Image 1 (spheres, helix red, strand yellow):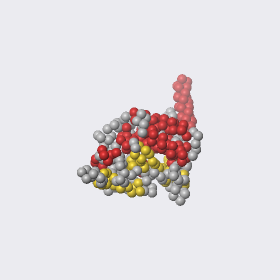
Image 2: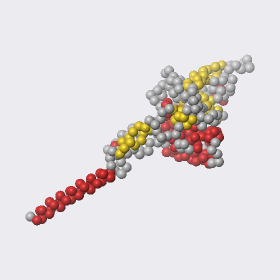
Image 3: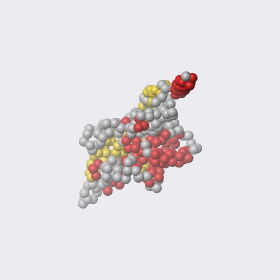
Image 4: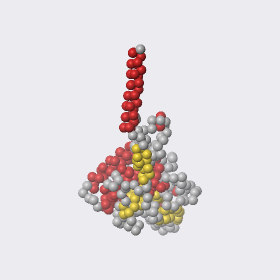
Length: 341
């Protein structure tokens, strides 16, 4: 009765949580054992117009589907057959063009297929960041700062363009607060994640993770706000979701999402001088996708909500008063009879 937050007291004695929700992002520990819970197949969430037959659908983070038993298999360097339309793939503009020059062509930065040109984004690394209070504070300050830039506009296309420009500018500024944070327990903030732990393939990929984590922070914490709707708005169409997100990072123009798979290819570039050896270039064969986007449409979305109260603490209080009253009366009667004798 005096368990005011209605938590499982026995579970609190163990390090392991008995809640199936504990692994969900932004789980606030608000579940209450005095209620039953139900799975809502039609949650009260806003649907947005999509490009597919102008229908209205939910918009969800596409990167969520990459978190499964297949995650480690979906790696072009792992020896496993690639699973298409699974991970969110990013690629630099011109990554499939041998005539376009990149800085790494001269520096040979692509040993062991490590390159700035293409890569995969994993939900687990984004989840680590979103679960960290320091990152959440950094993201909160970023959103507060950007919101000041859009006070005088409600044009969602313009807000989207401003957001991506602001985000690119923020991440290209090495004095930004996000670069001053180091945490070896969070992959994207681990200074050894690239060279020692081989979890990230380049500094550009780390920065792209910063960007994706900030965008997902907006998705989960500012639902249906102007910045949220602007982020999901296609700047080149009337739809929401199902489009490539574009960012400029360290002189690379990245397209994020919209690819089903890619293959690393090596090619020789012809040079004009006969005495020079033709350099080997790393390029990428990209396969487009119609449903593998950073924020994509979904026909179904489920949520968990309270169904009905199974324990009424007010009734328990009344019962306790009655029980205590009966005990007092019994004790009083016993002592009264004893004194009389």
